Length: 245
Ligand SMILES: Nc1ncnc2c1ncn2[C@@H]1O[C@H](COP(=O)(O)OP(=O)(O)O)[C@@H](O)[C@H]1O
Ligand SMILES: [Mg+2]
Image (cartoon, rainbow, N blue to C red; front, side):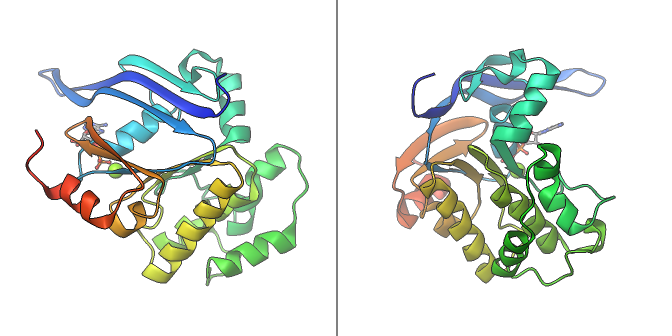
């Protein structure tokens, strides 16, 4: 594997076939990109532009119709199901909206689930201090389906923070949070990148994206621009400007 590349996508296309008429919807068109160790990458674009679909293709959750995906040196769609689940469990962290929490387990157990599965030691103090840092208000013993969207999001974030994954995929991780908690989440993700983790975050928050190393701009299923050390104004223009086609 090329030393510091964590993810490589080449000409990724994703089609969805809809309804009785079998109408084909092209939700991703020829997307190529790379992500690096320790890089904080953001994906921004209007609603429906394909950000979540791209994250799913990048992270091994949805096989592209065409093109190739490489995560930490292997193509997840060519791995056996046990290898892909091992890769997900040990190397990848997901912070997706209402996606990855286990309703039958209390908050605390959701956070330490990857550690339990990997038979690693659980540092209770660390978990409680993270929850405090995240301003988690509920009890760590509450079942997740009794928690608000924001509190559930904090559980998903804490889970990633206690694991030692190499890549974190986050889909609007601050979407359900107030701005102070959002800032905290940003700081924690930033801290992970400083320890060499590659963070890929979808966000509609221009201010948050402008604090990342590189922003990928999506529009109509295409990656239309890449901005290194993006500034608010550049992102605003890339998202709202109509000069690009
Ligand atoms: N399973 C699906 N069935 C039908 N349409 C879908 C499906 N997944 C995504 N789409 C469509 O693909 C486009 C991109 O969706 P999505 O990746 O969720 O965009 P974003 O995250 O940027 O809002 C949208 O037009 C959406 O309606
Ligand atoms: Mg989305």
